[in-house]
Length: 105
Length: 131
Image (cartoon, rainbow over all chains, first blue to last red; front, side, top):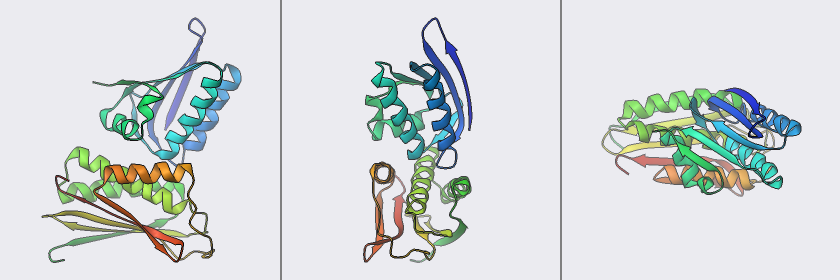
């Protein structure tokens, strides 16, 4: 798993790029990074998943926890460029209803 | 069942070995003849099962997986924990486990917990071709 991030001060949004595989092994690292960003600016987050190959329920759990915190501050999380087979996981779990999802064609 | 190929995998019950489980599952499902989308489904379901069984906090040393492939029917997979250091620990659910099990059930044709007197021993699942 690799995470890069940048704060866009003009849109007050965190721009995060998430790639590789997210599972029970590295989900704690994802949690630490994302909550660390919110500690600096509790703003909306755009997550680019162009290079994301896999995410399991522990990774989804991290995103849900972060979303709760972002929504407490009237923000949101947009997830962009999900591969179709990963989008499927968001759909079957109903998470496509609570995250703003954009699918990679 | 006649004509079944069996593959066995035993890995330490540690998060860093989930990748090994996924790689092995993909390879076996591919060899069985599933298509790319079905391989992704099986890989995810098995990885979730591994995490599910490992996270029961009973001091399990190993995860033991058995893949049985019938090239006419599909694949049957058992994901079991080795003997527990704390065998009296009851099966624990929770939101994370519920989400995990729901994903497994959605991706496979059949999933069941193997619970022995309230103790989770493992998970059994199968997927048929075109299922």
